[in-house]
Image 1 (spheres, rainbow, N blue to C red):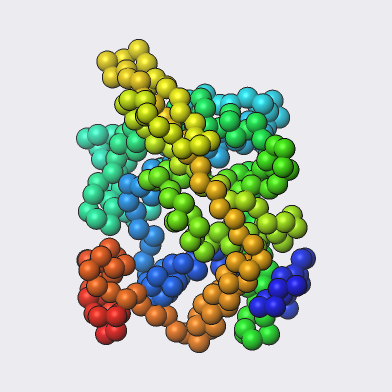
Image 2: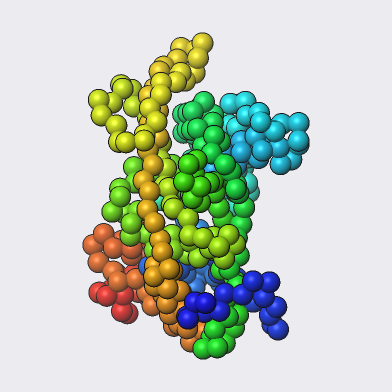
Length: 333
């Protein structure tokens, strides 16, 4: 039993619990002021090419795994969708984003465009070009490699009910599993988080506190703490001379049969890290601190300064009238 919160299986709440995504905790402590504005619907999530690309690639992977597992049609079980089908799945994610306030249809180009918070215009064809190497490499090598493991869960949400007598409300912490597998040989659970950004460093993986939240959710569901495997692909024109242990490196062809045909070397590297019960206790203590502050209507702003969160925040850049803390030392107005 965890001392900082009662983790209830099949819990029955007298009042409707409040839902908190596990990723919100880091956001709150980065800037509680901005977090509160997001909760109130006054500002939307920032749009940027890395976020747009990541969402589209993630959607294509989800579609591919659901197809291979036969979740929507049993006839597709054991079969990967085509490259074009995966690209279309990524395009659908972009079009869903394009349904928001930051979207605009370009009649001349005949496609949707998104306006990012930096003022950049991102069009549909640009996004499809961005995700093309990820989809091609995923389909040919990464996804079949992961599918050789025993898949326990894929793209499924978990919920962790929380009750603490010191809190006014009951809560449910939620998260989503990219891919949960059992490793061949050891039989240990491994939670694979598929990234699309820059290469993940071991020190960064070891310090990510929200992974302890995922560990708590998986432990409540399966009774054990998983290993965390953070995987990231990158693409090179030439074959690298040296690879990290366990990395996948394969050549693949892009734009075959066209003037743009070229061969790239796709590299998929995984960084592994563990979380134990102590890490979960630390996470729950931090979570409780956040919830006590929320219930007391305390939303601490980010500590500002050069290259701080305020430096990158769109509230500070373009909407100073809506952020009393922008540009102030230590986040104090």
